Image (tube, rainbow, N blue to C red):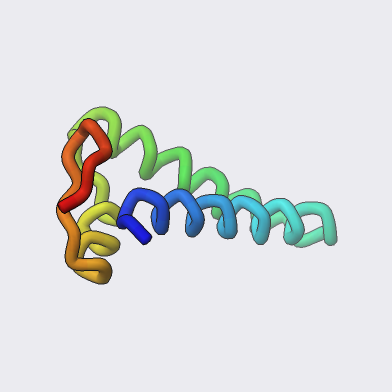
Length: 70
């Protein structure tokens, strides 16, 4: 698995968990969604995403913008 695929998988899991929390009456699940929005905006503005760096260290692969991993 590539770091980008792992990151997308983790984002999907976090969204599912936050939606389940919201639908079961736990309104603090909304903060997970706001945190993800903030991190995506930060990544778009600065070009640095902390989760990219973490997943690249875990999987030991560097991915370019074209999507090819070595």
